[in-house]
Image 1 (cartoon, rainbow, N blue to C red):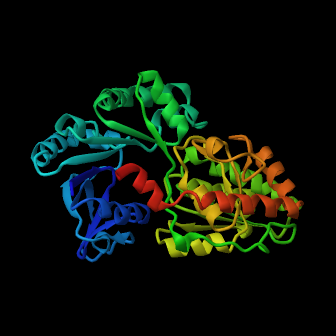
Image 2: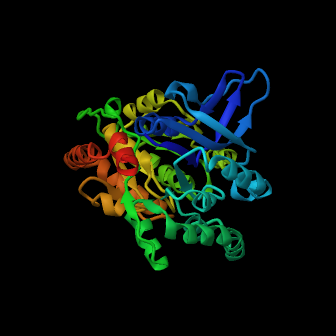
Length: 379
């Protein structure tokens, strides 16, 4: 069996060892089946003495090796560490047989310079994210894109010598303009325990429980959902909205909710990393709302469907090519709280349609599992 080097995820380190986000832990547990040795080339955040990580212990996934890089949480902050990335690849090129890198992780294109057997996996589109962010002015958009463009072009060049995958067909189509042939895959973290269907749990006038889960930042459109909910609660006074996640917009969103006078109906849970806890949240709600402006293949939508929720979402990323509006999902216009209000209101008053949609979505979600996703990449 081959030895695999992975660059794409960051880690935390406390006194008990390395810790990784739950989603990435799920992937690692599947990946180790295909390789004799797996090593993570990863930025590591060292936690202060006495502080325990809230992430998942990496050691639970097996004997995973780690080659530490200086910690950074963005492309800009990683630039000063470029020499450390080069030194790491020079050292590891003779130890491992294959490298797997996830675009847009900083300097992942270096892997193709040092490895003949390389996989580049496009999991997002930072250029599109900047272009579609409604809170960025023209100057900020142009500045962010121009700063990232050299990195993007280095990846495009590296793709000529690698096997290339994309999360969803929309990214696959974008790469065609660079004459890059890519295989489209649908990202999933679903396992058997993640599927749950309660046909009696439907959104209604007296029982509307809306959930959002994801990062709290401008590009995710959470403000749009809050504004839509402010309209919904006038029609359905007992409705609730739970916002799961954390991020740079958290304080601003909480202030907005308070200023609108709807704090009593909206709950912020903070970040939830454990899958069991997230599944429990899915199963105590009956509608999932997602208003993101830019995505690759949003796993959280699949997770909501697997847990038996109706989904109202923007037609973002791979969603329009995987799901059909009105059949297993309801699409609403990005940046338009009135459209989200209208689409959710219509569902609430049509139980038969709600049940048909969620059952169809549940069956569709069954075709996208973690095992199949990882097999498509590594077998």
